[in-house]
Amino acid sequence: ENAAYQAEFDAKVDAGGFIEAKDWMPEAYRKTLIRQISQHAHSEIVGMLPEGNWISRAPSLKRKAILLAKVQDEGGHGLYLYAAAETLGVSRDELMEALHSRRAKYSSIFNYPTLNWADVGVIGWLVDGAAIMNQIPLCKCSYGPYARAMIRVCKEESFHQRQGYDLLLTMMRGTPEQQEMVQDAVNRWWWPSIMMFGPHDKDSVHTDSARWGIKRISNDDLRQKFVDATVKQAEVLGVTLPDPELKWNAERGHYDFGAIDWEEFWNVVNGHGQCNVDRLAERVQAWEDGAWVREAALAHAEKQAAREQA
Ligand code: 3HC
Image (cartoon, rainbow, N blue to C red):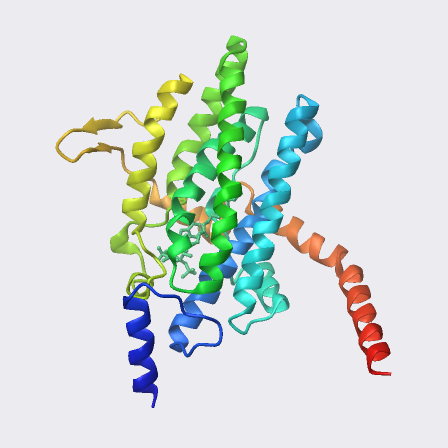
């Protein structure tokens, strides 16, 4: 009987169709989606911390309002993604416990410090730029709830990327000190941003993701796409990217770039980056501080339900 279900599942995925929450699916498909979607959600929520640090320090009311809106969006992205993960039969409490106990991951990029205002612009330009590259193909992911969550996320991400680039253009038209701040931030964020796309394809362990229509473009191909698109933007901005081996390869039709420091990557992924301890402590603290709100909401919902039944 499973064979018939498996054949129907394969046919739907191979035809580029959507698998919905109530459809039969292989257990391994469900598990890898819970893994990826929940870690994507964790990344959005933890990602609010580095930038949130600068909301009260923004240089103008306009910039404060823009940053506030962006960080709020990230919270919303986390909510859609947790909700998408819950359609696979896992509870929010389980997902949060996995993050707080470090059994679940979140994107390495959010373990770097935001040292000054230029970092806010570079995060918008490079980190959200990389996120867009990675999230556009996910709009065609085979799991319906995940793909649909990505549609709105991608629209909001393009605002995130533009506001970052606009912030940097403004600073690059400013004083030499401001230009140096931007270049310094680019030097600190460039390599961690291209690490966001994950290990080389040969080291990428979840090979099923491609077969099941979850990962539409491989880690290395997406990384290359990001580098090719970003080099021009850096030229317009007037900054140099910190990679002496970065140069156009006419034969390949792509930019060649230097070797990634995978020791740094795995060091950060495994919890030993500059900010891992602080980021997780802040999330655990927020979860504990919010316990009374969750309890009150549950108590209120139970009273409502009891009243309706009476
Ligand atoms: N940071 C932390 N862990 C990473 C990572 C990164 N940058 N890249 C890969 N990994 C982990 C994977 O999760 C996997 O570990 P796991 O089995 O415990 O989950 C391991 O390294 C091996 O990597 P694989 O390539 O085999 O794993 P995937 O096939 O899952 O590919 C991925 C990794 C491309 C990140 C994929 O999971 C994905 O597309 N995820 C959804 C998008 C996402 O999470 N983006 C992160 C940033 S979100 C963001 O930027 C928000 C924006 O608003 C700023």
